[in-house]
Image (cartoon, rainbow, N blue to C red):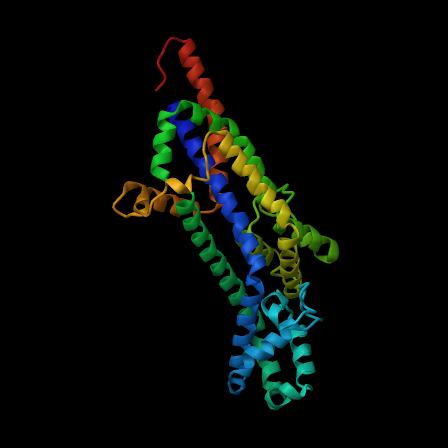
Length: 355
């Protein structure tokens, strides 16, 4: 491998990582803004109630809404507001015991008494047996929802910014100045990625929630050591569930963790938006203008008959691989570069041509 070819790869991966990081931040903000965690939990509890007592019919969803909007359960700052904030008032996590206790309270309400009182015993038995499985499905559904948003944002970003993977590779192969600037800015992009999803991340909402959980639940600290170096939605939940599998309080701790993550998303929104600005500035400094001149763009530019359409589609597919993928790739390439540069220098000093 020649040094020039390696630099082309580093430049390309730096751009992919920068754009992927922007996508990661946007999807985190979408999750908080649209209340996706709460709406997926609502789906899970509704399904649980419908299976527990099929005769609840349409009341299952309304009862679930009442449960997750209950001020003793909802962790949302909108929990005291009216029906126009329904989605944002939803709790993002609930424990088995809390669900049963709130249902016990609701059955005393005249609005729900006729639906719940005759079936309360079978509902409680079903919840005791199936609650953990239902919460696993909720986590999987939320992960799939976030995956959908990742792909959707990747497509919008690639086509909106006209990020053409093929054209980018051609530009890097021909323009030594841009290539050199991207290689020089790679460490800054790596550092910003670590700030958002890395081990020492100042704005990593998943790691912050883990630190907060250690504080609020010191009895679980011994289970929460040595988390993965990169924490995003999927890796954080999978690692936490694996660590707590033998802990009798796993259900409570997982619920507490989800609540902490949700409360951190919007609270740290300004910092996350600042990270987008930093990445944008780094790529622009390297000579890549992310925001195109839209006045010069025509609909025919997005025709499938044009090569740049397929280049943008390829970029969208590559971006959907996620920031952790590109981060690991860039770290590996950057660690290889000094070795290859030293080899090239030795061969040049020795009067031989590098391969």
